[in-house]
Image (tube, rainbow, N blue to C red; front, side, top):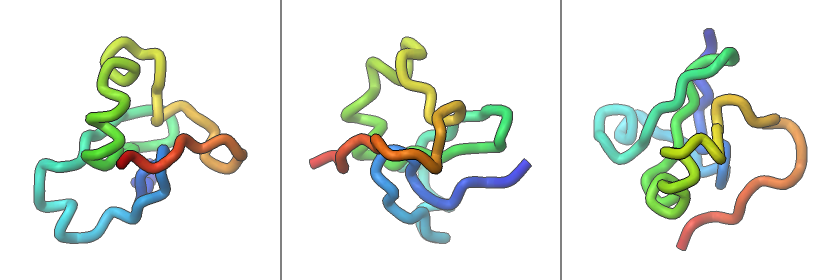
Length: 70
């Protein structure tokens, strides 16, 4: 299982400093562990918690990524 090295929602890169902190949330799926950045986690918290948005199961190659959180 490979680790995705960036937020699948906004394409923000995950650095080694981020890996040591708790700012990113992890989601586990068939393609490995996907990490969502803190701003996207906060913006899409309801969708993530209810399963309406599952970043571990989305198509990471196609268009339609969500906009970067403010």
